[in-house]
Length: 222
Image (cartoon, rainbow, N blue to C red; front, side, top):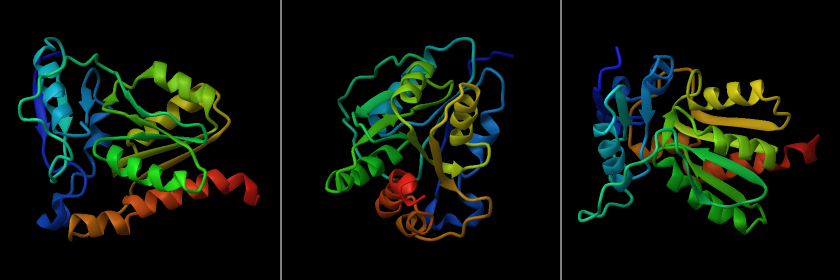
């Protein structure tokens, strides 16, 4: 119905010790299939402010903003809101060996993993995929043409999630490289300290670093 409704979705991803039913695991998957719905995930509090400002300027579509139960890595209380083009991503870091398409605060985890990988001579490009839907097709096209190793990282179920959206687009475009999707499994996740759960799921710095090493060295092992 194209109503300008804004949904701010707390506890997206791993909700820590609130209980296994409180993890925001399914929202990306069920929101992606709703026509004309804009789905977003800020990397930090500053970007949340800009996404909310952007949402307030959208008059013909509903807008969702998902964010986890954790403190913002960066937030400037005196900062100004920025009107973000709908469907725009942000290149946080250039690289040559593998590209990381990260959603929400996973951007920062990816940067930490990338810093470690530099010591192993693995160069990572990192994209902040703040708009889950619509996706930034210009950046996707560039990524498809420049990389044959792509990894998506999200705090949501893999089935039907952001990575699935990227996979579908790449398949339609004839991508013949390797795509790896990191996210929550097809089973209910137990509750516990957020950092511990992310570690168990392979969504902490160690897990992401190891996944990228496996991805980059995959061809050499065959």
